[in-house]
Image 1 (cartoon, rainbow, N blue to C red):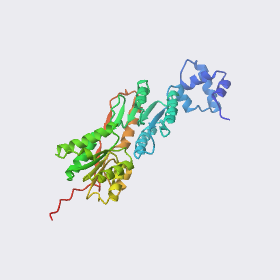
Image 2 (spheres, rainbow, N blue to C red):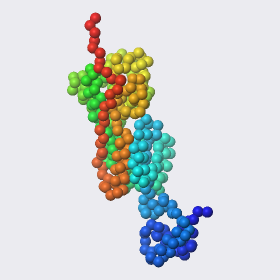
Image 3 (spheres, one colour):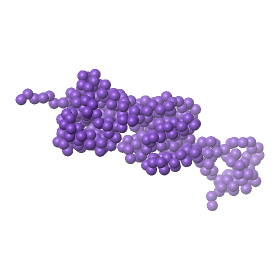
Image 4 (spheres, rainbow, N blue to C red):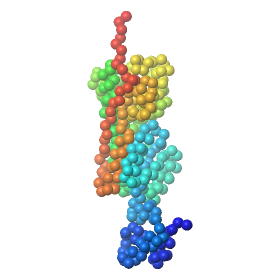
Length: 339
């Protein structure tokens, strides 16, 4: 049978509270008693639970991480970046998803109430931003990852969505494209507005303002990309490029263009957003705006752990730059031939 703290207390002739105080260095225990308890611990080979000791000291050395789902294509990169830092600093990670909606959040809230972790990394599940802000205001250290352009009043790590949209637009303008079809994310997300705003500004400055009919709202899914392209074709809208607000919807657009007999990139140039692993393996490989997902996870975890080490945790965001990755889905438009 494993040796317990009660066994140590009985052998040393003291209470379990006294043994706990000796283990944790808390409370006043005279040196003779403390020495006797330590001797008994050695004799019995008692190994205290690391979790119990940490809880007694007021911390768990566990970091919570809340995400919407692990099925999102870029989620693994963010989680891995956070794990790399958390493990290297000797912390554990407790991961929560919202796959079961309200029930998942009830279980998460119970863990918060039970103080199961010292701080929280969060990729906001839809509709939880106010709840996360309340947790932060109530004293739980929270760092939000990918703020979706919401710019919350809590610590966050985000990327340059507006600049990313501008990068995509400048590239398409430079290769001679003038009528882009834009497949956005949900309008309720700030990142959607930022990406569209940066993209539209560049085309307007180039003297080719975007046709409002060619801006179609999507939901970041493969299906929405395919549906948007088919809708534009069915309505007889002319376009020579597609800018999709994520790589998954860009892949759907690519498939729809192929089925419609439109060649990519000769007839239609295609640009996505995110640079998920699959984007380099489409046919043709996809030009995209890269978000530094792994670095976002790393930075958020470092910021939280630095707080545990005494660095104040403020609402000032950390912003990482997006970059353009040019691949085979974009080439200069072919000049018209005289007949």
